[in-house]
Length: 110
Image (cartoon, rainbow, N blue to C red):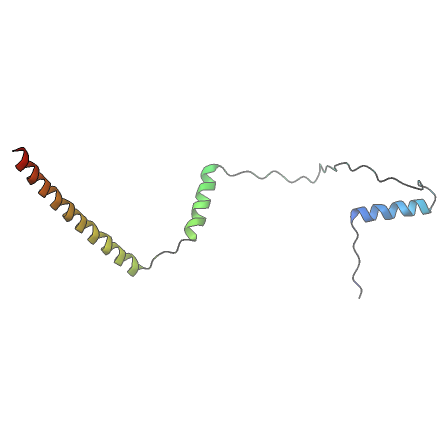
């Protein structure tokens, strides 16, 4: 079974013009008609409603959160312990420096 050859709109118009010339009803050297935009009024699609900024923000945020590589429960627990330990260490370190400088200025100022 042979596949049917499809033609473009331009090819169909040219073929119709050749047939008309061959039948004697058309111009011998038919100039192509100027292209005018074709407007379809009956089959126009309704305009899509654009989402407002808040809806778009929420949709994009959900999309980005789906791309995140979330840690396992064990990793989250381990990282929480590390952050807590570093925070306690830094608080003690800064507290010690504060105490030393307080005593030093009290000694100097009298």
